[in-house]
Every structure is written in C-alpha cells, then in structure tokens.
Length: 150
Image (cartoon, rainbow, N blue to C red):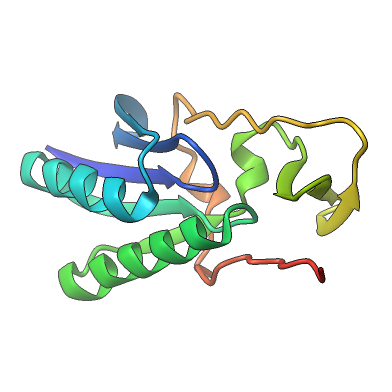
C-alpha cells in the first residue's frame, strides 16, 4: 500500500502518522529521544508500506529533535528518492505558543515567528490531523531553529 508519512518531533511525544489517500490510518507515538525512536519507527513503517511522500514539522521546538528529524528524513529523501516537504509546527498545535527555554516561548502572529516571555506555563499539545492536507507543506525543508539569544 502506498502511503504518506508525517513526522511531528518538536517535543514529547514524537508522533508519526501514516496516511493512505490522505486519511490517517496508523499512529505511532514515542516518548523516547527522537534519535532512538525515529529510526525504529521508520524501519517498521518502511518494511510495511511503500512511502510516496515524507512530511514533517520543521520547527520551532526542541533544537535537537528538529536537527535529528531533518537529517534523518533528508537522508531518506536522498537515499530512497522519497519527496520531502515541510511546514511549521504551529499547524499541529492549534497555533499555541511553543516552549523555547524557561519562560520563553515561540509565538506566531501575522505569519511571523518570534519569541516572547510568558508568565504562565504553556503546553503544546501536538496532534496529527485526521486528513493530511499536502497543500499546507512546502519545498523549503530547512529547519526553523529560531534559537533565542540567552
């Protein structure tokens, strides 16, 4: 079966969705580090399905998770010829602030991502969409690190 795979690895848990004809048919979730969980999950999925497209949230979020995910998926794109597309993480948490460090959070307003200090703790609840809208994703797959000055 030909599927698309979406990876959300901006925080914990890591979420991987398998989509057939745009509909979510399988969800994989792990609280392990992305560097451990992603190869294990993808190995199983690539042995089970034929992947026709890879999609991921390119940031902002956990610096290491973004870096590992990008390198891993870019390697699959090059080695296996599977097209890779990306969008920002606000697509998958309802546009809520994303933790940077301490009380500093990434926020997106009017299409621009900045950082703000927020006095109240914010939680990013990541969700895989039930339907994969591939038009949301673009060719720019470079990570959105947005590292704040400390």
